[in-house]
Image 1 (cartoon, rainbow, N blue to C red):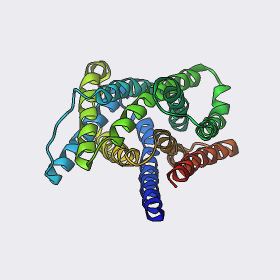
Image 2 (cartoon, rainbow, N blue to C red):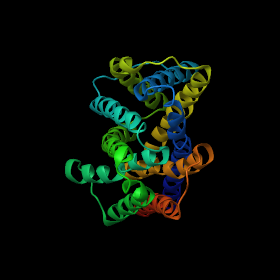
Image 3 (tube, rainbow, N blue to C red):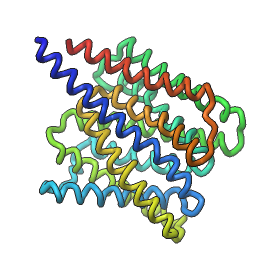
Amino acid sequence: MKGGSEKTLGWLNNGLLLGFLAAFLWGTHSVIVRYLTSDLGGLQIAVSRLFIAALAIYCILRVMGAGVAIRFSDWNFRLAVFATVVNYILFHIGLEHTGAANAMVLENTAPFFVLVFLYFFADTPVTRVDVLATGLAIFGVFLTVYQDFQGGGEPLLGDMMEIGAGFSWAVFLIASSRAMRSSQTTAERLNFLFGIFVCSGVLLVPLALFSLQVPTANDLVFLLLLGILPTALAYYLWYEAAARVSTLTATLLFAASVVFTFVNSAVFLGATITPLAIVGAVLIVAAIFLTSMKKSGDSG
């Protein structure tokens, strides 16, 4: 019994580590996108990063000697693609009207929507610990954007779009987490991700054509970084984490990216990190460990 518990805890810790690595990479993507929006349209950036990420995943699959296949018949896959398209539209356009830190934080209202979906639409028990952890994370989100909501105007419009992005992201997280928990191999998870990038990119192309701009050499470098690091690699690491932890923990791991977004926004965009924002970030991280400790306790 003890050996089994230690093995389970080892998988859990591994999942948390992978999730935090994904969060670290995700914490850079708002800053990069915010930089690119000075030259390029939001949807052009979205389509470019998706295709670059798909190419990166394809190369990994070929190096592994694994086959490349898209499972169109998988309901979780189709739901994830739809949620990705909606999320990318709202997130990238919203980012043109609000700050990088606010965009990332507001997208992290997803844990609340995930909890609602799990309670009302999925055959998944929601415990008091889950509610408490989600409440901590959402309160942390509120603390980080409290000042921005007072301003109104364009920042408010952008913030509301990012909340919509959080709702669609919750759908993506649930569909992906369910698919990953039933997956068996790394190649299977990479193929799922490759299909999402390709299909979402194709669906977004018609919208992106209305705002095409010629990227500079500098823009191309940042587009490559955006497509490879916080898209292809971060999503892959999170998928590996989602295969090992609960749906809610996986969702909160995504929320941890806000901590790294604060740092990157301060370093590269000159954003101010308020004491309330720091407290909010601490609450989000605490929520992750709260749900993970609950799972390890249940396993024992």
